[in-house]
Structures are given as C-alpha cells and as structure tokens.
Amino acid sequence: MRDDDQRPSQASTPASNLAARDAAHLWHPYTQMLTRPAPIPIVRGEGIYLYTDDGRRLLDGTSSWWVNIHGHAHPVLNDALAAQARELEHVIFANCTHRPGVELAERLVAVLPSGLTRIFYSDNGSTAVEVAMKMASQYWSNQGQRRRTFITLHHAYHGDTVGAMSASERSVFTQPFSPMLFDVVRAHAPYCYRCPMGLDRSTCRIECLGDDVCPVALSPESWASTLGAQLERLGSDVAAVLVEPMLQGAGGMIVWPAEFLAGVRRLCDQHGVLMIADEVLTGFGRTGRLFACEHANITPDIICLSKAVTGGYLPLGVTAATARIYEAFLSDDRTRTFFHGHSFTGNPLACALAIASLDLVRDTRAVEKVGQLEGWLRRGLEPLASHPSVGDVRVLGGVGIVELVSDKATKAAGGYLDDVGPRLTKAFLDRGVLLRPLGNIVYAMPPYVITEDETAWLTAQMCNVIDEVLGA
Image 1 (tube, rainbow, N blue to C red):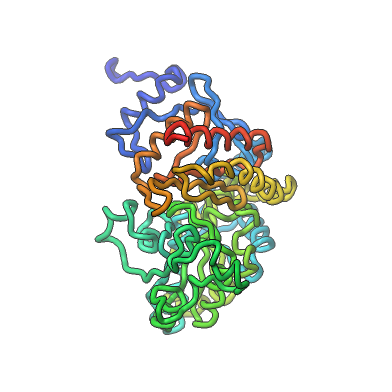
Image 2: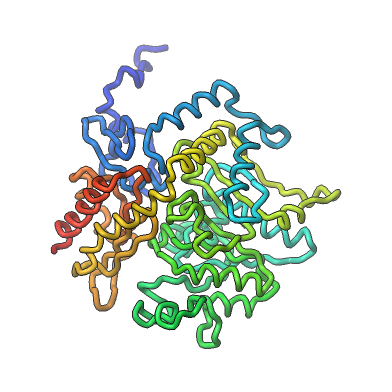
C-alpha cells in the first residue's frame, strides 16, 4: 500500500469524527444533503435511550423509525442473535429450509388473525407490500381472470418500491418517479379531523346514531369517491383493496374508527375482491392490539408485516395469506408458480430474532403495556388541544399525535414540507428528545418499555417545544 493510500481505521479514528466521515461518503434517506444539519453520531443504545459520541442521552421518541418495541440492546434479543449466528447465518430459501424459518411461521400463524396460514418471507415493509400486490394479481390470473385494478386510500403510504409507491398517495414522496408508476383507484380515507364527508366528531353518525359503518365507506350516489361507490363501479376489474388498518402512518398519522375497518372487510366480501392489510407499522402491538385488524375483529386475505417483527434488530418482511390464496398457485403448470424472491428471504438471523421478540411480547405482556402507554400519552398531550396552533390531538395505542395548523378555524396547514418540522426537530434535540415530525404532524412513538414517568417527561417536552417554537 502506498503511503498516500493509508487511511485511519475506524478503531483508531475518534468517534467525534463520525459526522465528518459521514459527510464525505454517505447519502441519507429522506434528506436534502445540501441543506441538512449534521447527522447525530450515535455510539450506543440502551433501553429507550440513545447515546451520542459527545455523551448526550436522547430519548428515542420514534422507536428508531417505528421498529424498536423492546428497547435498545435487549439482552434476550442479543443472546438470540449470537446463538443463531453460531448455528447458521444464512442459506438459500428457494430449495432449503431451517429451524428458525419454520418455527417463526408456526408462531406467526398461531397469533395472526384466524385463517392466515401461509407465510412468505421478504426483507422489508415495501417488499412485503410488493409481494402482496403481486400475489393478489396472480391469484386472479391463475384462475383465468384478468383483474388488474387496485383500490387504495387517499393519504396512503405503502413504501418506496415501484408497486408500493403506485399504491401510495401521489405526493412529494412519489412525484419524481411519476413516469414509473401505474395507476390505482383511490377512495376516501376516514380522516376524522378532516372528514371528507364534512362531518365532525359532534355530528358523526357513528358516535351520535350508533351506525356500525363509518359513512366514508358507504356508497350513496352523492359520495362518488367512497370505497363502496368505487367497488360498485369497477366490480370484477378489482384485484384487491389495500389499506393501512386503524393508523395511516407517513400520510399524516391518521387514526381510524374501527367501524371503517369493519366496513372495508364487509364491502370486499360483498363485491368478491381481496382485502390486503398493510400492518407494517401497526403490527405487533403498536395500536394496542397485537394486530390492528383485531380492533374490528376481521381477517384480511393478505397481511403485510415488517418493522417491529424482529424487535427492531434486523430487516425482515412477512406477507401472510389465507389457504385460498395459496391454493390458487398449486398446479402442475409451472407458470402458475409465484415468481418472487430475495437473496435474504427467510434469513435465519432475522427469523431467530423474530421468535425471541414474540417471546418477549408474550412474557412481558407488551400489548397490555401499550394500553397503559395510550393512557399516559392522552394525559400528557391533552393540554395541547387548546393551543392556538394545534388543530387536533389524537392517540392510538403507543402513538401520540399532534396536528399543527396555521389557522385553527380553517384547519390550514403547511404539510410535509412545512419548515416547522425541522425547527421542532432541533428544539426537541436541544431538550434531549429524538423526534422527527412529518412536517406539521408531530408524533411520539416510543418503545413499549417506556415508563409512566418517562412518558410524562416526553409529553412535557412536546408541549414545551410547541409553545417555544410556535408561541403559547
């Protein structure tokens, strides 16, 4: 090696140089690299906290992008990872199998909504959705039916691969890639604060009349963009309806009434189309149920899982389907094979972590803890409801959401590119909290192991920062 080629090893380079080394070579997601602030050098994690290279402690208020549920560096998960690495790190899953892959499938089938009996592995949430859409499309073609239309909801976000982007709301996320995307049909989402039917919480039929279907799902002629109306219009052209049950994430942290979810299932059955539930965010307890579909006691035909499945350690995607879906691919005709896969499909390390995470969910009664966390978040964020810059405060399970507006009367807001997001992010960091607002949507989604006192401190910082940045 030439002298001028010698570079300091990571071991010999002070951690304080991480940000500079990062700037030399890395390209971060969802980040304008020209104007971004320096990245935060994280050197370790423990419980709900992350530690920086200069000794600061930050409360991980986003569960490290919605994945961590048991806290950082959990000894049970650490041991599971190390033990599996000593046994088998990876093997091709096309014509091999292994213990963690089989055991995880058995464990998932035992806890998923009844009837979801076949497990297909991939490697992240976007690909879990891609798998589901391809599965639904080929399900019909294998039976000689040409159904190519997907119905998705306004405000949807399903991922960043091409199919998942196509299913998502057209937005700043997808605009640069418009030529690559295929068309879907959209229906209203049950955004109660901004109800597309013009209702408010004091007049909504669900609350005041006791109807068992959210009106946004119904199909009177005057409501041409409801899900029911779209299904009536398109009929046998529809392959599937794809939804994020109970909580639409990146589209605005929109909380649903369970009645809408029940209505989606009922309408899909009525019109003979498949229902796909994207539970990449909501799965494994985040909404106060193990799976969000349990809020309405329904089973989708296909469910998509990722994020928290491994406790936040390694990427793993899961697409689970009913026996009816699976059996449509069984044939002596090999063209009916489901031609999809990934090099790391069924990775043993990730599967072993997912098994250990399921053990922790059970042994720590994690879903019950999320129920407690919901109450703590409600109590802590309630004072913001009267704030002049706050339009709505909503909480579901372990997610607390504050929607900021520039005009409370008209509900005007700046959206994802509102510069209030970066200003709030900096103010939160100054107070020792790692949060990443979605523009005017401020949310907290901490690991489930957060305590009542820590939650009170977190919500107090949210209240104080909003006062500080936007005025009391």
